[in-house]
Image: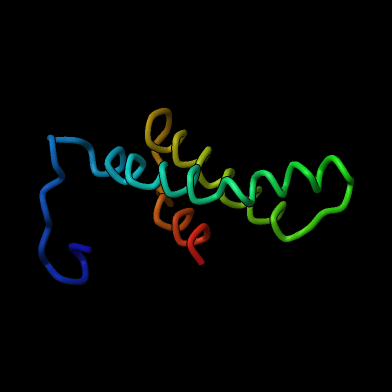
Length: 88
């Protein structure tokens, strides 16, 4: 956001911005996506891939990558992408 507006807002509690974004995205991804996850499990059990399985794979892979990029290695994080995939 700083590149667009020139304004950098402080992150609460002195957290790293990537950790803060991960904390904000986690409830959206897990609570907002429970219906996709249940549907994906049924699709796997019945061996009938569907859109819920595609959404589940994409969102959970983005979340796993975000955890790795936040805590274990240095890379661009995509917490907002996982959240947007879940709410759209």
